[in-house]
Amino acid sequence: MLTRKNFIKTTGLISALSIIPGIKAFSQDDLQKAKQIPEKIRPKRLEKGDTIGLVTPAGVITEDQLKETIEKIENFGFKTYYLPSVLSQFGYFAGTEQERVDELMHMFTNTEVDGIWCVRGGYGGIRMLDLVDYELIKQNPKVFIGYSDITALLNSIHKKTGLITFHGPLGISSFNEFSIKALENVMFKSKSKYKLPYKREENTEDNPEFDIYTINEGKVEGELVGGNLSVLSSMTGSIYEVDFKDKIVFLEDVDEKVYSIDRWLSILLNGTNLREAAGIALGAFSNCNKNDEPSFTLKEILEQILKPLNIPISYGLSFGHIASQFTIPVGARAEFNAGKNRIKLLEQAVLEV
Image (cartoon, rainbow, N blue to C red; front, side):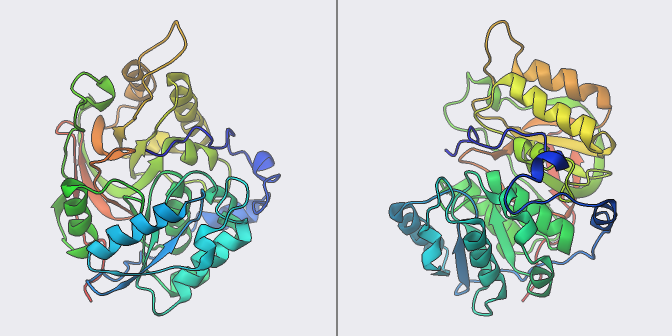
């Protein structure tokens, strides 16, 4: 299981982002342009025999992890392709910002590559955002999948290009029957309507982090945006800040104390338009129901902070740093029923070949 422990501890204010290599301070004109909504783009559906480009936009991987990823993806019937830079190391990054961006852009512009799969998360995606050529991605749309730290790229690419991206298993994730079936139904079979399934993690019966419950009932429709809570909070105040208005926002995190979850949610509520979201779907917050004493439980904090929003909210859906996770298309329209703890896709996330 990947850890978010080393993720950057920042509120995401422009003044803070400006000191990070690859991210600069922006003018008001830049911020206004960032609010422009591009036309939605669906990538081509993946088929057996397609070539998948493997990338490492964040943390370092080992040769064994690369081999395991290749084996898993080739078991789907795909071919794999990667550059030597996939194994690069620059401190705790999988190469410098420029190396990682060059690798990513190579995969988008290479006509022999049909889809792009992130091998792991870790930390580093947020340092690449200002170096990515979003216009080139818009001209070369492809399936792009990952989660955790990859949240920054999933949402920034969608926001800047309109391309639907996919919050789903990493190359090093533990693929099981549940996650494979969910992945196939969203990315390979091009279903126009699909209820994202639910499965409680094994051996978690006595762990409240994996309970499923409703905070506010209600049913809404909207486009899906979201991902890792701490990553999204760290984008606050930049031109990459996610627009939550009228969206179904999905959130998860891992290895954070309760007070940190409190902090990240408070940053989003006070620094973004999260209060104007259509609804909030919470995944499993693995290893987050912990704190120094005295403390609140994770459930108590979620209810204290989110219940007053008076929008549909539920907890415990099958996504996050867990083995049995469904794949969520960022930018696709969906229906969220908080009372039934269910997300239903209302449109195809990929194009028929």
